[in-house]
Length: 203
Image (cartoon, rainbow, N blue to C red; front, side, top):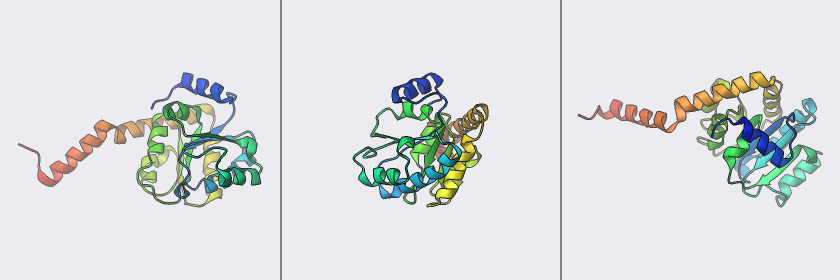
């Protein structure tokens, strides 16, 4: 999981996405806790500012067979603004194609891997404020209340409104934060420090 401009171009070409199209996406299975309904409603607000925005959603059962999701998208006349990929096995190649990663979960999250993975790929994140999302993202993106489409849409739009250089800089800071705090080495060191504090350093 790393920034990759060449892979960004390849994946966008593979999906038929023009280079200048703003892309918001998330990898999240179909489940009530993921609250895709709120993300669809937020997309209505994002489209007002960015008519060509494309929401790319991946995950188990996130495809044309998902009648509730497809119906909600159609009811809001967002058909051309959504692409449903279904389950994918190359998420590390999907993230670089995004401009923003947006997680809309309404409950059940602890440490959402999708945020760490997207940030490692240099993609700024917007998430609902639950679990460790606020700590993971900090000032490299935004957190918003759960089930608040207007706030979610505004936060996504705020990042899309940045010019390409500023968005890349924000993504670079996101990657630096993940590497500094949540890499395997960093987590191992944190556990060792915890053990040393509680039981002392082994002789």
